[in-house]
Length: 380
Figure (tube, one colour):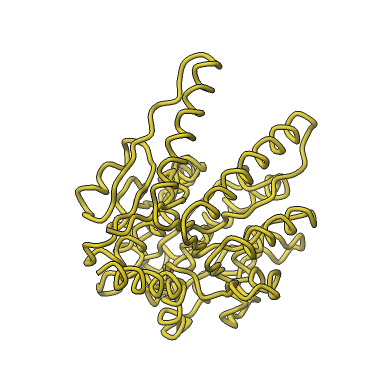
């Protein structure tokens, strides 16, 4: 049996959960591979869905400050023991390597402590097993040369393979032979086969949770969404408002938008992610149009052959779309301070072919595939 420790972000975010599901799905027919994942009890359903996962259940962190600190130390020791037992470590996710900065002195000190702990954990994760793989991430946002220098050292010295999802990130470490890039993992997700309906799928976010620079655009963003949905309703299109992650404010944003639409006499179905990934993928696949505020709404919409209107709130979406030679002037760019940000209409969107991109996204797993084949053949 090959034991693999999986380091990933699990807070019931559709995109991040699909990273893990893509990993489990890829190797589900190989009885010689077991993935070790740490998550709370809400992820128990994965054990009935997959036979190749060992879920290490995280305890509740509660009580006094001293009790919470003791619980967190215990969890960290148990995780380190799990890594030490593993044959390899896989770090899979999207924006894994972000440098936090700014704010008041208290926040900067808190972020610095977090960075020190994260660096210590990541070093242990890369160093301890005989192999370690980074799959699917971008690099950044980052600000300081020290942050990049530390990660350059960790990638170069200790990682077996680092596969980013954009050329920009890989280019920052172009001198490292074990660093490369391939299209986003979720381009390779199997989308349900279903007929298209006169439907607009809208992934909604709360810009108040996306950084200080976007807070001032929340009202204009919401008004623009209302206008787009109203225009499409007049053409006979139904609307699905979808929350990808309650923890990050999507659910409240959907509820607020739905209330505004009701006040105008416009109906919209609400869809909330709570482990129902196949239901959401089916709704995307059945939609003719997608207004993609979430990064992975863009990826999944393109993969499903929808007419997608990407909404850019960070450079990660820009970098990935530029790699596809996507027409960037057709995107809603929330980072643009000019008046043109909310002048795009979803009805003007068209299908953008990504057949080759879907095929190439499998290269994210290329190094892990090779290592597993070699390791399993050596054991047997």
